Image (cartoon, rainbow, N blue to C red):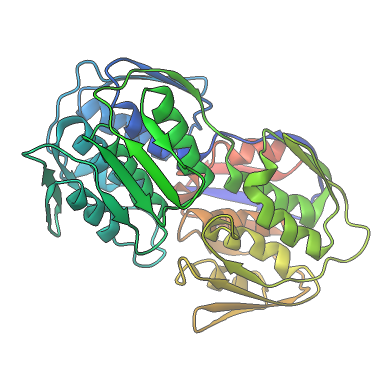
Length: 419
């Protein structure tokens, strides 16, 4: 077990470089096994979820190297083995091996995925898509087994809900299916565009990504390529929140501002002063008190569910009342009770978070219940006076590449220690 120890209230200044996107990386690694030759991914974040995927790849017999944020994946000696338990159940994104194995072999067995406890996240839409492509699927409490004895064929698939995971998983299965697949009501997130970009470079024929209708013409085979992963828009949001709260001039490099337009708009409404460039954002010290805004999460390009927790500490120290309603994961409230321990005036009523500010946050012993809740507590600890200890640091290590080192670079007093 590890924990973060933070001595807050110190102003931050300087520059930080945002890592490659976690949510892209966790889809691109399984996608790479569809190739018949090695794929090189650049800008891979050094996070525990990536190391879990490496372990899974090696269980499949895939040769994999990872050094200096560059990963080489060689599936030349891969063998399709049942993967009911172990690492496959340690993270949510392991379900992408379902689509990848179905696309590559036409069959497979994968245990049910793990991940953050932020409410129900069923995989019904994934299974619906696989069945439409011609697969027989057996979904039990132990996992999912699937096979397509007559091969996969193109289909028209309507997503009953906008789902990033299901959209990508169906793409992985459909790229080598016979004929054309059309995904309607597809998710539009940048991570989907990144996955499709990789697959198209590998030889796939995917059109319409970034819109609600994706068309896929099946191909016979895919080949390895080199691909640069997009920047992590959620990590960018984390640093923007803390920079707006206690920054004295903070620049974020390696950012695609269009990916966080909704966040930048809300921060602009609050009065945060920023200069936005094509690949970086500078947050200036606030000349006047910030004022609160309401947040409602929506599928992209709406306000991202992953960002609502990260903005909460900033809302707590801004003037006025704020209401946060998460329509994607209404039970994503694991940070609320912990922020109360830090003197946060925050409550939940019918899955709606209500905030009254400004308050002076005080250091406290708190625990991360999930990845983004943990990051929100780090932001709060940096804002608070006194010492904050964030327990259950393993949640944060799943998705942030050296967050303490990057914050130290800006002048923060934070360390990661073994508990």
